[in-house]
Image (cartoon, rainbow, N blue to C red; front, side, top):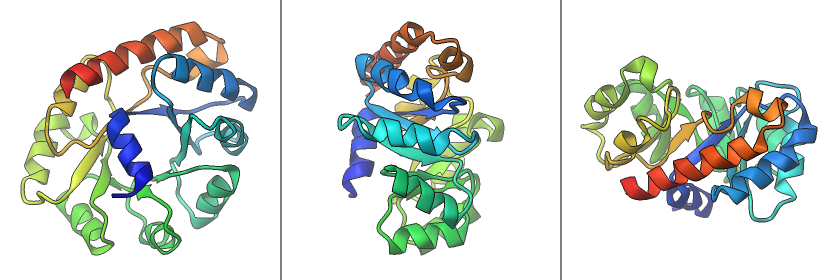
Length: 210
């Protein structure tokens, strides 16, 4: 398995971050590190994404990736900034093909069996289940994953401290993505002590679940 994906699997949680001011990226990374979770998926939902990735990528202990990636151009920008993995909300064959050809780890979003079979066509064995809770949560994931024992999933969307353990206890779940410990308002308000606290609690839940 790809080393980057293996790191994600070992961490069990991917903090999904929408950051509006790159100047907060360093303190965010420090809070995640202090909380025991050296990972961040910086989403391309804000104009600060590329600069934030650049800042976090300078911290060698951090595993930083780019999320909400919709185009090949965004993949290139993210990787040039230091992103080590790519996450997309849906399955875009052009983006997936580019990443596969250039050996860039990518976990595209899936929500049904057809999406899963498209991922298999590209020799992927780890995908993002999104939006997890809106599409029926763990019950749906158990149903659609049943025929695909070779596939593992990163549920994202609606994951929080209250349901994290349930997801992680389902064997096909590779890791979980979530934003509850890194909410945008906590970052913009400079509440990095709270982010550290929530991160530490999430790590504890994950370790106990596995």
